[in-house]
Image 1 (tube, rainbow, N blue to C red):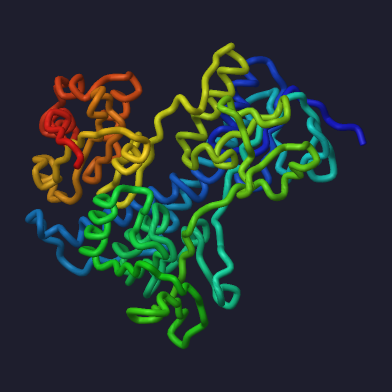
Image 2 (tube, one colour):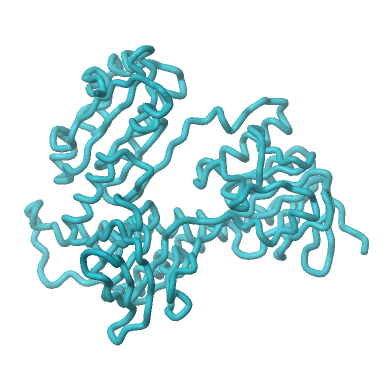
Length: 460
């Protein structure tokens, strides 16, 4: 079989792949971009685009129910047209996907191949009934939801982050397995759309990656909206029930099971690397299937790179895009960019959202820093009070010896936007004192960030 030859092959049309194809095309290369499913990857099809559209509908529902708090009268009952909600969610995703497809189609030296790609050697891949080759291969294959082998799970229908976006009716009682970022976002959305919601978390607190004060504040916010949370769930199991699905929680205390109409499994994600034929190319992975890369995102095989969720260096759209920038600039511009140069940052898109950057308090202490912390409750932030959304808090973590900003967290209205004020100062190497001297606009949530930088207290 004669292989079709290209200057580069990009496997996966998620956040990093098409952007890299565009840069390589602009550099005069011929590029094959191989996508077995939907162009746009997780972000466009089952992640950021559709979920934030769903969050917007849920927020509108919540605001309508709270209209009287603002002196606004709504005549008649407030209803949820779930088919219309879902149609809007899918349209936003579809429009974005179509835009990506049209962009790729407009590049004459880029060939979009809609097949599954598997390595047959270090520089060759089988796609469908054919074979392609290139001296440069870039893997951007993303990830998918983990569905553990919980007892009884094969006997029930479950939802994942993908399938839940196609619901045509609001669940009567949604049981969410997993009290972390994805699970909590869907839990709040469907509660606001009218479902009863119970979150079952195996650990002792939700979003265990965060500091304990963040977990406690989120638990309080969700609890006030009527979301039940069961922690320390060591006996998660399932069985069909006359009223839907029985989800086991604990074997020792509390009600032993929760009866729900729908079950969403949101306990983590795994890379899509198990069917790429990596062994045929000699590409190394870790125990969880993530492709091992160095700081320049190069694999152990020369001429092969891995970007995005599949390399274990960040499971976010923004880190995938930064992976593209690192690879493209190093390859085409003679740069020496590294994945370790970026400051970790992400959001939890419940309402109010959490914006996070850098180290948490616990991480900073674990790394040997003596820290100071500035903190302010949203009840003391004028803009939050004026909006009637004074839940949460903001804080900044600073090295007590150098005054270097180590991290920050903003849980409150606009927290996902305001956190960039702290992130940008960190990226520029500025100190907490420099942040304290910065003038911010009033009235905003971010105006209090310089204030807390000037109210640092030693962490006991």
